[in-house]
Image 1 (spheres, rainbow, N blue to C red):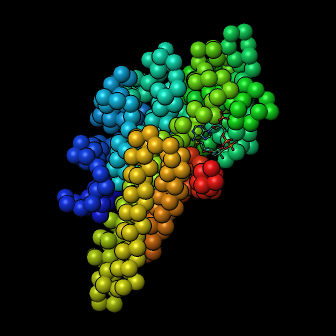
Image 2: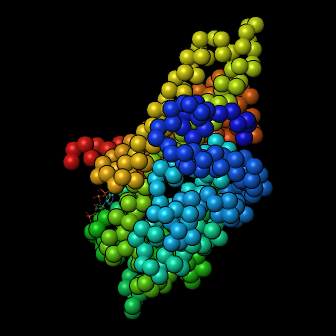
Length: 395
Ligand code: COS
């Protein structure tokens, strides 16, 4: 990605500027993530196959300490306590400034690892999480189905009792890292006609018999695919959390990850803003630099203001999560909603300032334009976030 100009606040902020309440250690983590992103991860991302799991990239996230920074020591991480949402956001925002592929690979290790850490038995945690933290085991979070995306509680994949275990039958789609993942968190129905209250979470090894899949090609180079479960056998020991209470496992995970999707969006918005400021200073029209036209300077001011507002909402939601505040479902949804919608607007505005050059294949903004669209859909669409916020208002 172009340049490494310091951003106007937060993760990449110059000394002395407002940085919310990031500690010195969190700022160092952001700087390290950004440097690794630029020097190590972006080149690895460039040498991968677009739309496929990039294992050297995932391993490098482990080796360079970025995945360990998100997990506690008991599973091979570098944190004294369990994960911090704020640190997750700091790393995601920093990586988004340098390599969206590295950012997404890191996020998917977290989205797969955290439900096991939060809800798994000691045996499940020991079996899977240390490998995820080292970047050697690639996980996937398999909730969505062809007929049920936003209405996740209506899912139809069946888990039928079979001796001491279960047999899973159904279809999942738009699953990150499928079909190449080493382990899947599969949400399946254990009790019919009970909506969210009859769903159970299972940990399914990627090589389980009866589990097949195929990649899906997306507009952005994101490893994604569909899965077919044809009577896949799992033991009772592979249930995550309580039987019929898997929906809670999913929602708890999303409470943690939604602010960090916002952080990814803020990083992309900042990268677009930085590029637009640079371009407006260099490009001349009608005998003066673009930035001297008020139409451009006011656009830049608006882009910076909205990006900073999104960043503050993201950090506030993450900090609320870390303090265990009861309002976290609402603040997580607000952070994801506002930051992803803002990033889409900022990237689009940056393209307008650049003109046609930004639409050439290979330009940073062409890349961001394709990347910025999906976060308004995955981990709950903007409409679902508004639904969650409204429900919390009425509570
Ligand atoms: N934390 C913990 N538990 C939660 C929760 C949360 N944030 N939100 C809901 N739950 C629990 C509820 O407490 C309830 O469990 P109990 O009956 O045991 O109390 C259960 O989950 C069902 O909750 P609810 O009735 O609110 O569920 P709905 O079916 O109405 O759905 C929405 C709620 C729409 C918010 C949910 O389906 C959703 O988030 N959909 C989007 C799915 C999504 O993000 N998909 C992308 C997947 S990842 S790429």
